Amino acid sequence: MRNLWLFALFVVSPSHAVSDDWFMATPLQSTYHALANHQPQLAWQELILALNNQTIATPHWASVKHAIIEQTQCGQQLLSDVVPNAALIKVSIQKKTNVMQQGYQFKLSMEGAELPSQVELLGPDNGLLISQSQVTSYAPYIELESPELLFAPQDGVYRLTLDKQHYWLVLTMPFGSTWLQSASPNGGYPLALESPTALTNCPPTSLAWQWFDDQFQLIKQQDMVAISNTQQLLDKPSSSPSSVKWLSTLIKTVEYQGAIKVEYVQRLTLPNQAQ
Image (cartoon, rainbow, N blue to C red):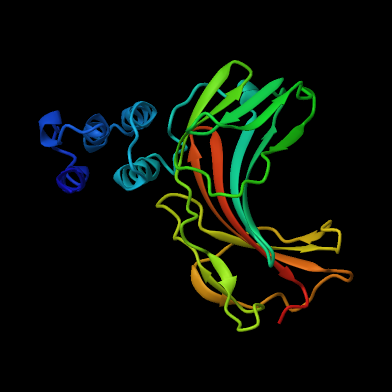
C-alpha cells in the first residue's frame, strides 16, 4: 500500500527525482522507481524482469502495467526489437461462451512483406500454446490458433518467438468478470453488457455482431463499433440474413506492446431465434 501511495504521489509530481529508498524492498521496487521517475520504458523492462524471476500475485503488478501502457500512448511508444519487415502482428485472447460450454483461445495473426518461417507462443509456465513451422513466407496474411482451453489463461509474461527473435508480452487476462450475459429469464435477449472502460490513450471498447449458419460457417460480420456506454442492455439486431442459426456478440478491448497489438475479447453465442 505504501508503494502504491508513493508511486501515485510522484507520478503527478514530475519535478521530483525519486530514490529507491522511497519504495519498500520488493521485487517491484525498481519498476516503481523507474515509473515514478517518468521512465516508462525502463519500468517496462524492470516489470518483465521481475515477473520472469519471481512469482508475484497479479494485484501487485497489474496497476503498474496499466500505468505504463497509459503513459506510452497505449503501449505504442514502448520500444521493442524491430518486427521483421514491419510485419503487422496481432495477438488476440478470447473467452468464448455459448449455450453448452465455455472456453478460451489464443489467436495470432501476421501480415507483411515477409513472414517468419517459425512461430511459437509460450505461456508463463512455459506451456506451448501455438507452434508452427514452415509458415508460408510469401503469404500476405496468416492466422494461427491455439487449441481451445478449458481454463482461463494465466496472467504473466508470455514469450512470442518469430524465427530467432523473442518478444515478451505482459498479459493481464480480464476474464474474472463476465462482460456479456443474457438478461432474459429464458436465456435469450436482451444481453447485459458490463465491460471495462478502455485504458487512457487506448482505443475505446468496441462491439460487433457475427451471424453463422447451422454448420457454424460465417455468413455475415459487422465491423467493430466503438461503444461509449460500457454498461447497458443490448437487443439483437432487428434484421438477420437468411439461413442464420447462431448469433455471436463480441466485445473487445485493445492495448499495444510496442509494435504488437494485443486484443482481449469476450464472445457470447446464442441461437438466433432466442428471444
